[in-house]
Image 1 (cartoon, helix red, strand yellow):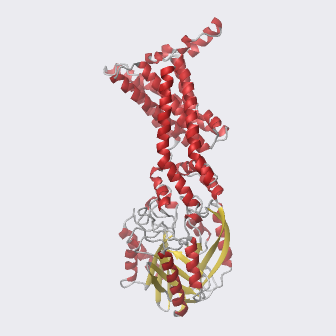
Image 2 (cartoon, one colour):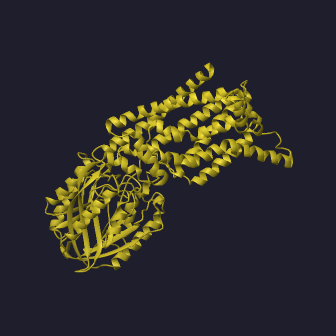
Image 3 (cartoon, helix red, strand yellow):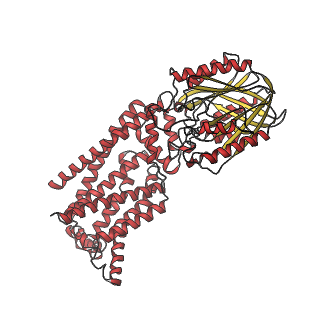
Length: 636
């Protein structure tokens, strides 16, 4: 992850799950009742039981005039939106109606307060009400265009429900009909009891006149124009650079974070590029028997977040493996995110093909450690193949670029190895702080350190002592949740033994580790009576822990001592489980659709630009709209 991508990930602080529709509706009615007490206060509230009656009457009037439009919007918006081809769900509709009600109450409350302390009269309050209803329409129009991806004319239909309902109620109960003459005495006499009910409404509403409703129509048209202009200006860079609409991204993003929908994958498919990625499988089985453990390493990135794309790839691997699955992190960054969950099936099918082609043997090497600059490499050979685990700890590091990993694996193969399963341990980082977040890119000093360390490991493994291999495994789901940085695979441990030398591979289902935690875990495992000779701690880089939080590393939210105790216990359990096994490695190539070169960076740059500049531009648009509103009221 680069600094630009970090800025985009940091927007997760604004993410929240949409509340259920009945929760939003309940709060909306409560707010309407409170607004009614404030707006329609009869002055009788202090008179004991009689005051309670009038207090209830005020609350009811608030629910009727403010709450009913919200209720109609809650239940009507989804149906109308779906009818015209939209995607709004009941939860989204109710939350949208609630926020719209808050906007309306806030504007009218401010206007009423101003009228108390200034010479402005009731007319000013009703003018503000017109602005509030038009603002609600504009806000709903923008959201529905983004979420449902409808044209402005079509989106205006569901967007107008709350404003239109409120306008109809105000027209009927303000007695505005008395200012109009139409249809002759018979028709007028028939309709008046239904369209003019001022005697059933608070006296304050009598100040509304036909010109208020005419102004409301004009204001809605003006505000819709400003919304359209805002969308066009903000959307243009996206269409020019990426060939997609910003509204597609915004709608999919809202759908994912609010309700866990997969709409965002449709957007990513439009961005995707075809790529060929190696899928490496290391399998351990009982001699001639069933599989005991399986390491699966495709050169993809398990992102972008949640279960979108390959975000939940590690768990999917575990479901498909016969033995205990170990899906560590490969040397690939966000450009190699899978665009849809369907691409995971392609990877898993390729992994199965590799698994079926494995040639097993009982011989393995003792483990070796090499270093070059900041890079450290743990290596162990199985037949003519090898596992290499790279880390920069205690230095901070995030993803290793695809090209760097390919070069490092190739360097190791030139020293006498055949297939190489190269793991990015992904086990020490300082979150989203810093200019580049430890991203290992081609041409950097760190990339050459890693390539050199891989070459040294290949040399040492070629000359290393060999013997029959034994393997033990253990795992614990743990009680920690993704919100605490631990995914559904929990903690998995495998321990190999060759010629009496023991090597522990610890895999935590999380996204990187807090600085220092990896070193404390290794200290526990390699010291004391039950110590292993060599150990390394890895994370899967699962992005299921990043649904609602971008920076959620292992150790940030859980007790380190509890984790250390659990890992030590699991390693001890795995050592007791050690038994002779056969092992083998195979590689197959998979053709999948990924984000593509530089697409992630371009997407992040555009999204960050919208946030940084879009806010100022939106404020300018709002001020311009308000200025036009003032002019309309002055010359109307």
